[in-house]
Length: 127
Image 1 (cartoon, rainbow, N blue to C red):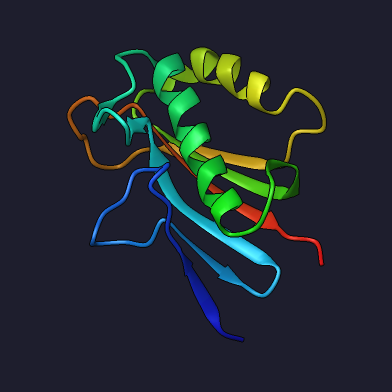
Image 2 (tube, rainbow, N blue to C red; image 1 turned 180 degrees about the horizontal axis):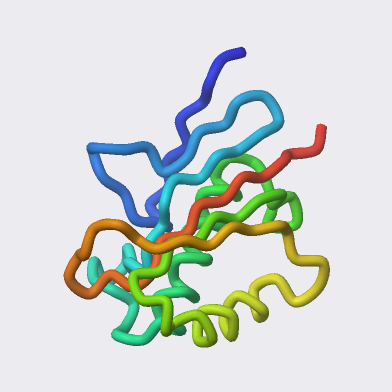
């Protein structure tokens, strides 16, 4: 099956990695941080600010690949600080208010200045 590289100006990007890849009816979204592509800076200093932006970035990639947030079947979250768990969940629950997809949460390995969260998603596209 051929893979389609997904690109959008509505999410963070880099020449070093693809924002997302679609293979058949599956979209894989790379690790999205709380980076605001419009301002070219972190969305804010709090876990809530960065979580909201990371989820928004992932959603933009899914939509650019022809999917919707309702098609998300798996979320992987990396937190820089385990103490941010409650603040992360606060924003995550707003993004997936009912029937949230399964998720895994781990600790972000490298310490990157100002980076609090990275979110990866896998989504299924109907039809």
